[in-house]
Image (tube, rainbow, N blue to C red; front, side):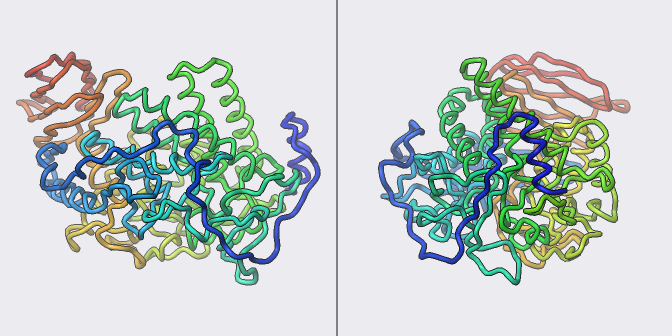
Length: 560
């Protein structure tokens, strides 16, 4: 499969991509630094930080959601440890950075990271507005370049793009390369089947990956119901989406990436010099769908949302035509010459979340998650399938470790595809193995070994960071079974426990709610107590029997 044949199909689809091709730079030039000038953050209305006290764990704990889970009280211990660690990573903007909001950082180094932060918002949503959560993304929008680019890594002390990712004015290149031993970075990016952008990008290819801001914003909206925030972030997101189309779209209509923050993955060499990634391509489909949804929610012209949906549809067709392997039943990256890369990684599961996979493709992808020979390991989901070259049963970072962000992507993708029970089973398995490691070590880790209840053999300890997802979000959503739908003012409670469970001070859609379920007399019977500061709909499922209950302000009691 060659890119020339892909290009022919693209022209037939009417995407209007030029058949001319140009190559990128060769050789390295000195890195610059992104200036703190007036041309950054022009699309984001929030312009200045209003100082306020930074929350502390000691001062906030009594206000946070407080789960009870008598089936496994140790999960609750891990929940509170994760919050204690998270509070160490809340920060106020430093003077002169141009940052406009308090934020949670990645617990990795002095920089803030875009995809780390997006995932961290997903567990901090449960404590909104008590802690810096979704507003942590404000600082990326405030540092957005005039052409729409947002660097995925920004220095926390200066507000400048991470120096290694600053493009001094050359055509697009990768500063750190693709893990190809014979090729030394920087490495020029080749556009095949289209003209190179006339204006050089502000950052390198390394700084333009994982465009999941819109996903994080929609996850927040599901919990908070804050439509005003969607209106605030819509234009920065549209500008970022268009910038990625300008710089990362290859001539075949798919999207390029390099190591894509999966530092040492065995997939990386196959992306060399302009290969296209299944993750970035599916993320752009997801991005377009969510821009369309946002546009409708905030009252933009109907044609605007329809345009994003058309773009998502065309890109989905291309992904399914070229990246789906009908013999191996999986999605793969493409090399520069259009061949499918031979490495099966967790990146393929972005096709579920983006809605790219359809029909039999979905069931085949789900089946892979259950196979012990590939992704169905002790600690799901390894980032590389166990039967692939380079897989390490101890993890070795992105050569097989189970990582909270990619596992969350898989879980949400399963839910999107209608496999809710499979999603919950997988999330609970991840939660339980994470707890087994916590019970032995007393802390939470950056990543985990796939074949043992141990930290990955290259993993930071006390990492919250995105590793707060399992102890906090998974416990509330999959252990307790509480899932909010703020726009519908509805809370779903899927009870699959044997003993007492509940949550004090549960927060969604501006409500603060105390919930407790106690087993009643007889199998499958439960007595519920719900105390709320406002009205909402509670959909309860217990022993596969569903009931819809109207919760009033004050005390409510129900028997199921």
